[in-house]
Length: 233
Ligand code: ADP
Ligand code: ADP
Image 1 (cartoon, helix red, strand yellow):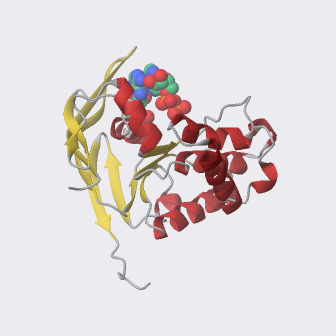
Image 2 (cartoon, rainbow, N blue to C red; image 1 turned 45 degrees about the horizontal axis):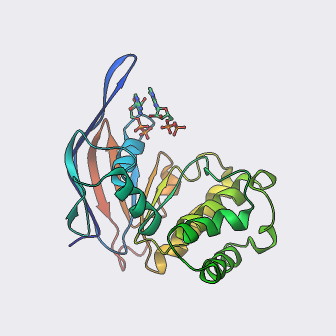
């Protein structure tokens, strides 16, 4: 079975201005090892789609399947377990715990998932070194630049070796240098086999992916896969 599948997903928000049909019927299959970018203008429904895929919001209709298993009957607690163990998520505004050190932010999900202190520490060291943050381990998130904070968020998202990484406008609050850095890191983890679904309005960021899905007004309007050995531009 594919790693992730969406069938007929629908989600309507009920705001003050009346119903907003954010996701209007989405079918999507993501296979292991793919790096998929969902791109489209602000308000297209990309973020809502990502929230549905990660169980942060529930669909009004349709189903999300993980490894072929329907999540229809998942409780909030079950989704929380999935997000701890098998789905890592990074957000535009990092969402780090501001009163914990960088090291503790990265280690926390490993401890919550039941890793030993020793294992959690080893994983944290490995990722912080890999992401060029070893010297920042004792810093507080607020002392770091935006780009550094996003790298911490990435380390935290990856510490439990999730099967799936979801990224919601991960460069949305970064400058162009930070954006390039995020692209480089996502590409690197993808080359090592990490499955990634990225949503972004930034076509440049989306170009790091090997499959680009265009999203407009709650629907997929295009889906282009660039073959691994495809057009040698
Ligand atoms: P951001 O745009 O910063 O990503 P979120 O999408 O996380 O913000 O939304 C923050 C909160 O506001 C959430 O509870 C979300 O459901 C709600 N929200 C987002 N957009 C709207 C909207 N247009 N109308 C009402 N609530 C909204
Ligand atoms: P995108 O990520 O493509 O910018 P979103 O999924 O954030 O799109 O939003 C899609 C539409 O749904 C927008 O019109 C947004 O204002 C609206 N929306 C998002 N979240 C909420 C919410 N919690 N309540 C009401 N409207 C929302």
